[in-house]
Figure 1 (spheres, one colour):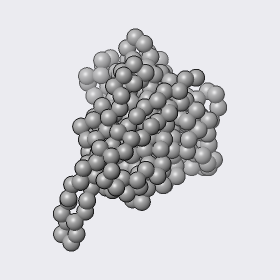
Figure 2 (cartoon, one colour; figure 1 turned 180 degrees about the horizontal axis):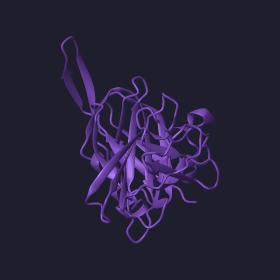
Figure 3 (cartoon, rainbow, N blue to C red; figure 1 turned 180 degrees about the vertical axis):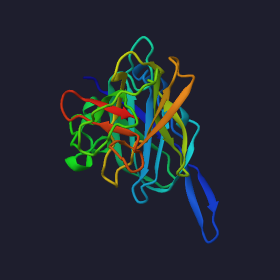
Figure 4 (cartoon, one colour; figure 1 turned 60 degrees about the horizontal axis):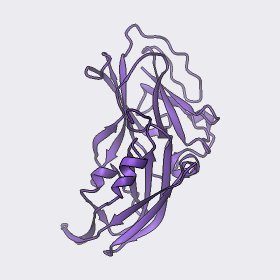
Length: 280
């Protein structure tokens, strides 16, 4: 195991935002990571998450995009970074071992500050930000402590396949199979909307389930924790240029059959840390 250090520089400049009844001061935040760490240590990509402790407002971006700056309310924030070591020779997004670090209770009050992150693999697998820590099998929840980051495999099922929380899936093979996939993490903007997702490389279907070769966080079920929002693009050709269907997982790898009845992830809580995501 190796530890990798990142430095995040927050350069604050006040912006006065006028509202109907009051004026609010925001900090203009410019993020600066050491570029060598991004290109050399994390060829699989780096993302940064920021959450307002009081309002739960959450922002998620690629580290490179954060260099352009964005606005945060002054107040108490928590930060997390995830970097992936990559999988040579292509080093696609979210490939290789994940390295994580968090900082809580960072006060933004108009002063320039520097935050140091010491990333390691253990934080990814055990910090409650990244996974579920309760067992409620009837709701499809398992305690993933120690395995909060999971490898991903996708399996297509027919429309008549039943997804029932807390149950195994008997997948009925459809007549037409998807031929390639992309997996994405949604970018969360300051205004609460989602920006263009960060996508993995295109993976051609060669087996079922189809291993995606990526590691991603399960996401916490605790309502006070920020969520990772995922998207899957399924294509009818082998090079991800003919989109057949899009699936959304807005509770991370936690099942949500009310909002997302066509996609059912089943995280693991053993050394076989592969989540099979069933699609129909």
